[in-house]
Structure formats: C-alpha cells, structure tokens
Length: 103
Image (cartoon, rainbow, N blue to C red; front, top):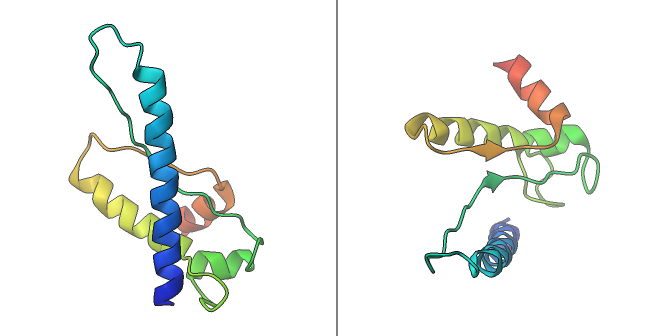
C-alpha cells in the first residue's frame, strides 16, 4: 500500500509540474513580466476502471489501487472550511451525489 501511495503522489507531482509548465508558457507574455500561476485542486477518478465504483468510493480492495473518493471529499471539505479563498473541482457526479446524500 505504501508503494502504491508513493506512486500516486509521484504521478500527482508530475501532473502538477506539467500544469505549472503550461501556465508558465501562457503567462510568459504578461505585460508586467510577473508569472501568475493558478493551482486548482481537483481529482480524476474513473468509476469502474480498475475497481468497482463502490470500491473506489470506499477505498476497499487497496491491493488493486489505493483510492478512496469518500476520503477525498471528507478531507477536501475540511480543508475548504479553513480557507474560503480555496476552490476544488470534481467531475464524477455519481461519486459527488453519493457522498452528498450520505451527509
């Protein structure tokens, strides 16, 4: 599980650096020569890709893939409550709907 978690973190960092690189390229033409970067927290969870939708949601069967959408929502809502200037995006509405109705 620890190895899988490290892989998830590594892939997240690679994605982050790719996004920052794209933002840097786009911002290079800014008039004031200051780089403005926007980092937006988000997830990408594919229901049914490696695990069932229920397994992704609850985090069950971590031997296949370490993921818990329920934990993502719980932790993100906690963090967003600490800073009103933060934002979060999520595209898999089936997971959001389930989490919302369980609250």
